[in-house]
Image 1: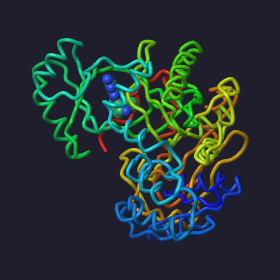
Image 2 (image 1 turned 180 degrees about the vertical axis):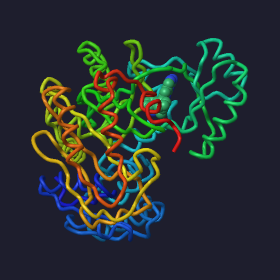
Image 3 (image 1 turned 120 degrees about the vertical axis):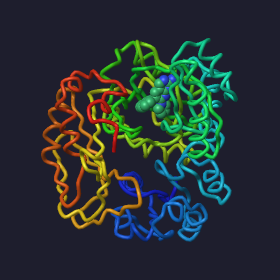
Image 4 (image 1 turned 90 degrees about the vertical axis):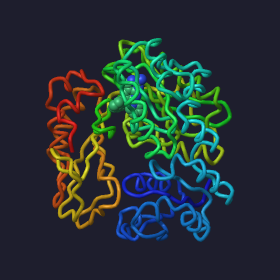
Length: 447
Ligand code: MV4
């Protein structure tokens, strides 16, 4: 087992990783930019190393700086968290080349799933259901039109190097193909320095269902149930829940088993998430994330499994701590992401947190690096806290969520707490009756 781990991240996930390490008797090394010198994870870590000025490209994305910190501190392994370098195969390779264990999948699997065409082809070979579409990249408007006629309009043009929705363009008829094709390629080029695009049948009102998986890298693998992540705005998730109110036990078992079999065949190592669209009782694989996700705590709540601890144990060469039959999904959990943004205009609002009082009580968890007096820097993601409530039933969670949001005090900055309170009052949300477009209809798309 590792003696010392470098946490190559910041904010609430850095704190989360520190906590798992602490409980395992592993020393922690925090890295931080000059803007994060007073951050909670820096205060709690056994050691800390400043890796650069505030811009992420000069600090949290600065591979030489992070590896130098790892060398100076004499760590055994590096945990990348999510975002930043967590899905950067080059970083994983460089860490391993410098003698550090990268706590995550192999660079080969990171690279494989980063290319959406290779990911889909791999998923197909592993027996996962796909959205009908182009077998590979599409290189001309004519190809878009012929495929559109073949699989039926509307179709969706997506970036091969993409993910997270950037560069996507819906094409409703052949007339719209030319403009959509060039717009999608230009956006893909700008966002990913790769203008390659592919085509899929457009699903108009799907839910976003993701399956948490764990593999030991040697052929053992399990699924830990699903998360419903349909409540999102501009491709930013706002609220997630487990299990999904839209799945019945047959559908849940079907997709879970398909994901677990795929992980075993792949000999996947570590934690991963298989993303599906779900519409009219059918699942469609869209991509796989080779990292821990923001919303992992709701899976922890309904399975009782510490996912960060499992990541660390697997990276250290340990076996999975359980087989599929040991994993029981019980109860329900809902996570609200709290952002330092105006709850209606979504304008970011960094600044000094003058008061901080998180909710508590049975079934209430708050993952946050905030404290009274903390100055939230303007350089990074606006998420400042995650409120996770769990209980025996979804209704118990709704009551607990309403009470917890009332109790939550974050003074001095705007937050999206009022937005969350508005969401959970909506009858369609209470009924679990929402798809990926529901929230944008409620709050509008404009910033
Ligand atoms: C789709 C889709 C509809 N049909 N693919 C968005 C980001 C990336 N994860 C894939 N995404 C989508 N792919 C087909 N064939 C709709 C979306 C989509 C979406 C998916 C999940 C959660 C939120 C979303 C918001 C807009 C579009």
